[in-house]
Length: 421
Ligand code: HEM
Ligand SMILES: *[C@@H]1O[C@H](CO)[C@@H](O)[C@H](O)[C@H]1NC(C)=O
Ligand SMILES: *[C@@H]1O[C@H](CO)[C@@H](O)[C@H](O)[C@H]1NC(C)=O
Image 1 (tube, rainbow, N blue to C red):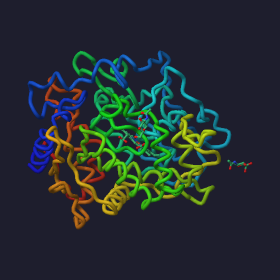
Image 2: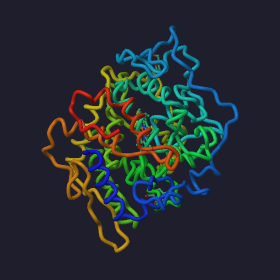
Image 3: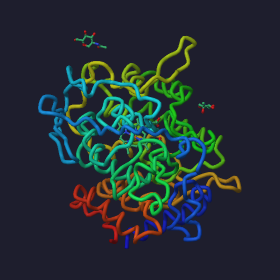
């Protein structure tokens, strides 16, 4: 019942913000069956199928080997969870940097783009669930529980395909991800807006203020982040910058929406100081490291241009794994340093707040219990239903069963509210 309650809160929240419902790719079946058609990704424009590259030569991710085992994470199973090693390993040519070609797909996530540029994910950007889980462990030493949660969120929230377990890390590549495009409709990939991708990103534009380009690197924003952080991309400085971006969106984006899933953006920001720093640089989240992962290159005139996301030379990953619990703590800490209201700008020009689980009157409480805290991410994953199977076969049951099989084991003992199946 709890999940039904959460879902209804999400639905009532979304109704106050009609563009959320009408946004291409957003699951609106929960709201109103008549709107089913309007959820599809726009057929043209940035991120659309029409503009999405097609690489006929799909080569899967290069697997880890006995010679270069990394965390020995293969086929979606749990790896060693012991980091502190160099990536890519010296001599491992299969995982050397290679710039993506014109037919390869990249998207809003620098962590996954970098992994694809090193062959830890399929270099064409059409990836599988197992590749996502393996790559996160082998490259960044993400804990198995968080690797699964992020991959499951990616697949279900952004309309990857839970039958083929394939996902585009960028634009709409339905012809390659879907088990049956006629039945599933479009699967917009990680570029799909107001799912995993959301407003107030660190270096990506808001969807509605940029003609739909919410996934390309923006050097102006990278420069703003570097200024706010003064070259030190730590928790405090990123909290400050995230607040600045939030205020910018409130002021500039009439369709601004900051929903429960926006919590994930605080998690992504924590990756700068938790997952990207290198042991060869004392694990400092410094400009040299961060600019390499974001593909940012300083131009002669002082502005920031884009090259390609690259794991820095001689990079060694974090020693301990980064878990669900770790990231939730960082999300809360960063949020509470500079709290903002959850909600959005409305058509009538006001900012309306929303309620969702632990978020009440637009605020995330500072004194959540430890269990509430750990369950937050779980609720985000189980409270949403992918649109890929809408109108086909009991979609919510299938999607929930998928999520449960992937992420529930890690949460089973916490007593998080179990969704209805
Ligand atoms: C399956 C795993 C993952 C998925 C599905 C995923 C997906 C995404 C998506 C959709 C965004 C865009 C959010 C937005 O700003 O609107 C994003 C942002 C980001 N991701 Fe990932 N991600 C994953 C793992 C990782 C990992 C392992 C790293 C580690 C380096 C990482 C680093 C980042 C960063 C730093 C951002 C913020 C970029 C910005 O705002 O400019 N991600 N990710
Ligand atoms: C980059 O971001 C800045 C600041 O938000 C914005 O003014 C500019 O239009 C963006 N550039 C592109 C190419 O989208
Ligand atoms: C990487 O390590 C090699 C060998 O120790 C060294 O020669 C090189 O300067 C290092 N490069 C960077 C960017 O630290």
